[in-house]
Amino acid sequence: MGRLQKKIMIELLLVGIGSGNPDHLTGEAVAALHSADVVLIPRKGTDKRALADLRRRLCAGILSNRQTKVVEFDLPRRDIDNPAYLDGVAHWHSAITDAWARLIGQHAPQGGRVALMVWGDPALYDSSLRIADRLRAHGIPLTCRVVPGISSLQMLAAAFAIPLNTVGAPFLVTTGRRLRTDGWPAGVDTVIVMLDGTCAFQSLDPEGITIYWAAYLGMPCEIRRSGLLAEVGVEIVAERETARRTHGWIMDTYLLRRATPAR
Amino acid sequence: MGRLQKKIMIELLLVGIGSGNPDHLTGEAVAALHSADVVLIPRKGTDKRALADLRRRLCAGILSNRQTKVVEFDLPRRDIDNPAYLDGVAHWHSAITDAWARLIGQHAPQGGRVALMVWGDPALYDSSLRIADRLRAHGIPLTCRVVPGISSLQMLAAAFAIPLNTVGAPFLVTTGRRLRTDGWPAGVDTVIVMLDGTCAFQSLDPEGITIYWAAYLGMPCEIRRSGLLAEVGVEIVAERETARRTHGWIMDTYLLRRATPAR
Image 1 (cartoon, rainbow over the protein chains, first blue to last red):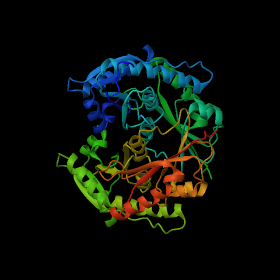
Image 2 (cartoon, each protein chain N blue to C red):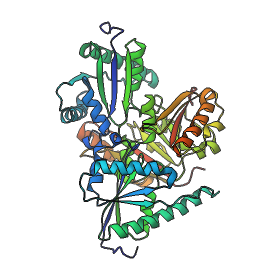
Image 3 (cartoon, rainbow over the protein chains, first blue to last red):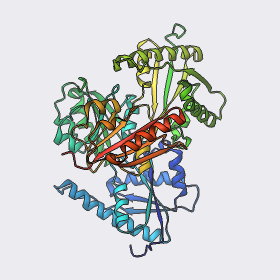
Image 4 (cartoon, rainbow over the protein chains, first blue to last red):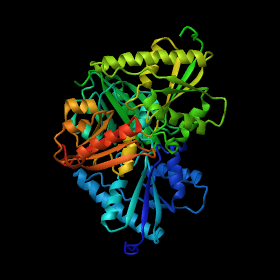
C-alpha cells in the first residue's frame, strides 16, 4: 500500500453484471466498464473457473476500446470450516482487502478508475462495498460508485413470471443459514433465500408452502422447479446435487410463499 | 373481449425500465421493446403527466424500427378513499383488466406481442402480473414474459453506495402502510419501505435508526438525504412536501437500519 500517495485518487466502480448473460447488463454498466482504466477479475479456484471465464468473455465482448487493462487475480478463499461465521467473514474480507490494495498499487499507481464486475447487484449479499470501506480505512484515497445490476432474485421472479410480493404485503430476503436457525420469519408470507448451500428449506414444516427454485439463472444451463414444498422439496435436493456435480459449482436461489396470509 | 378468438395468441411483455433513465435499461429490455408489435403507455392523469412523457421519450429513443405501434391510454385510477385497501385494489385491477382487454382487441386483433413498460421491476409492487392473470381468467389466450428492470431499492442502495443487507443478515421490504400498522418488524435490522405516501417512518421510535431516503431516483431532479432518523426525519417530511408541490408528483423510497443487531 506504500506506493499509493495521498494525492492519488482511485475511483472504484462496482459494476453489477446480473447473471453474466450480456443481455442483462444495463447501458450504465457497459459505459462504466468502458470508462475504467483497469478491470479486476477474481479467480475463485478451479471449481468455479466457469465464472471467471464468463467475466472474461463479458469483458472481451464489451471492451472495444483497448485502453482498459483487464487483470485477473486469485481471490483469497473463505475458511468455510470456521465455526464462528462472522469472524470467518471478517478474516476473509481482510485478506481480500490486502489483495485489492496490492493490485491497485500495481496497476493504478498514479490513481484512476478501477472496476470490479459483481454478480447480480453489488448491494445484495456481496462483500465489495465492505472491502471498499476497509481500503478507505487503510488510508487509500477512494471514491466508490455503484452501478446496480439485475439480481438473482429478480431473475428468479422473471423466470416464473411471479411477483416477489403479494398485494400490499412485505417480503423477507434472507440466507440459508438464517432460515435454518430462525425458522419461518414472523409477519411475512414470502421469503426469498440466497446463499444457501444446503437446501435449508428442508428444516421447515412444508405444510402450505410453495417453492419456486432455480439455479444458473440467465445461463444456458438454467434449471428451475416449482410446486408444493411437500411434493417437490426432495426432488430439488437431488436435482441440485446432480447439477452441482455436473458443473463443479452451483448458484441457486428460491422463493417460498405461504398460502395463509401472515396476519 | 369478443373480438379475440381462441386461436389468437397474445404474448404480453412486461418490461422493467428502471427509473426511466435510458441508461438503466438492460439490453434485454431494449430488445423486448423492439420486438413488440404494440407498446401500451398508460397516462395517469395530469399530475403524473411527466411519467407518461418519460415513457414516450424512452420509446422514441429506443424504437428505431417504425413497425412498433405506440398506443397511449388513460389508466383507470384507484379510489384511494376506499377504506378497505385490498377491496379497493381488486376493484382497480378489474378496471385496468377491462382497459387492457379493450386495447388488445383493438390493436392486436390477430394476436401478437404487446409490451408494457413498467417502472422499476415488474416483480416489485406492480400490478401488471396480476392483471395478466385476470386477462387469462377472462379467456384471453396469453403468455407472459417478464424482463427484469433495476428497481428503486437498488437505485437507492447505489445512490448511497450502501449494501441492502448487513453481513449474513436478512432484510425486509415492506410498504408505508404496513410499517405504520405493524411497527418495526421482528428479527431484522434493515427495512426498505416502498409505496409510502405519508412518511410512515414518523410512527417509529427513531432511537438508533439511520435513514437513507431518496426521491426521483435516476432522474435529473433526484434528491436524497441520510442521517439519524431523530435528526433528519422532520427535514425529510418537509423536503418531500416541497418537492411534491414543485413537481406535482413524487416517487420516493427509503432504507431504515437499526444499529443494534436484531438478534
